[in-house]
Image (cartoon, rainbow, N blue to C red; front, side, top):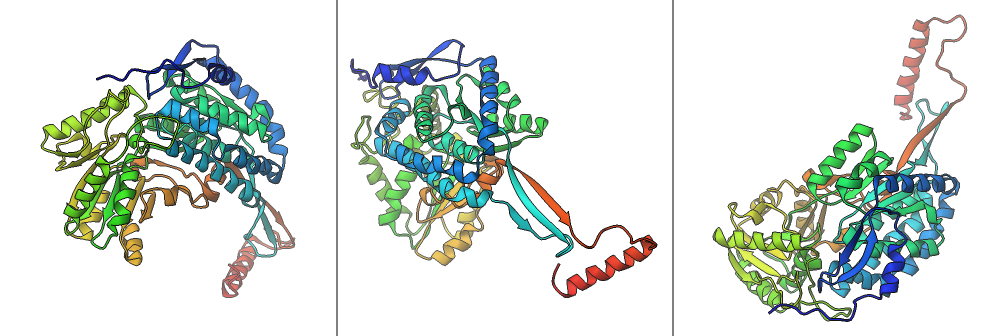
Length: 519
């Protein structure tokens, strides 16, 4: 049976048209569709390279005055923004309608953005303040470190988390004093447009944040040519191309790319806690999150019990769409994600893997629904063994000891996220240091590290470079300048003295400074 869409539009047409009209675009119109039903949501103009150039010109014109404002003045916008975004009903509706995810996961996006805004609203003035640094000659050399905005930052974000992935780069870029040209995925542009409207309502000058949409082949080069820094979240192939292009222009790039994230369930793990949390970590947003757990390694003494309980929990998950909190897992967002998920499951079955739960496309619910799926017996012959699925599929494996578990966890080109499940926290911390990923959660799948905004977060190995969050995430969007003044002692020989005498004097000074621990 195939799903029959409702004749009632998911979103009010006047609302979606109002948002689409804010785009900087004179190119051909494209239609965004609702994954739940396949129905059209809105027609919107795409941007041409000339439109992108215009967006950069507008952003640059607004940025000069914004950069001249103090960090404390800029930060006030983001404290106000927190209240406008948190659990904003219209924003949650848009996220759901354009991604197909459940209401609680869409709500989590507003929590993420609100939390990021409040963190930088509270802390940016301190982080961006001038800092005294030790001079080369104590007391004689006085050094101040200054931070300046880079200028205009390009932010390019994917479809799966339209405000978390994009706007959590936009916020630190703006609070640092930059302007932003932002390209969301065309399918999910409405939520970022509303998020921008809310930020203008919070006090952001309208010209500072420009939004464009279009295919990378059409406007990707223009987004790089006009930028002073690039923030990109998405696939590895695109990330590598952006890294090369940024290097050619000698500009910085922050790249968060793919993951094949492991979870280690040790012999003493609390399964009452681990099973539901790992099901959430595997299937949140239909598995369409770069932090999702795609590989679960379970100590062999707990493997049968864990698998049985995970399968039972997975089969009980409520799958469907709607603007309420009635479902545990929603739809995939695109045909291409459905195709890849089906291919990975069918390829695994063909190579001897067992589908313990799920494994079926559900066209009776909507065009892109796929059941949450648990696989066992996955071998290197299976595509899903090494490739990121980005769908609701998790593979479960036994291990015999922690050395093997760490080796298996690290046996991937990726290094984005991982989790460890045990009641021995000291042991967990030692293991975490051995796992080559940018983030490791203990007794949680991904949320603990993701919402800890004071700590820098990002990937290792093929999962990207650069960091979001914290001081490091903010300062990476600034240029550093040091200003040093010299007092008393100079660096030239005194009148009548030779360079040899000067060298002897400098040597004595350095030895004295070392003895006194002033250097």
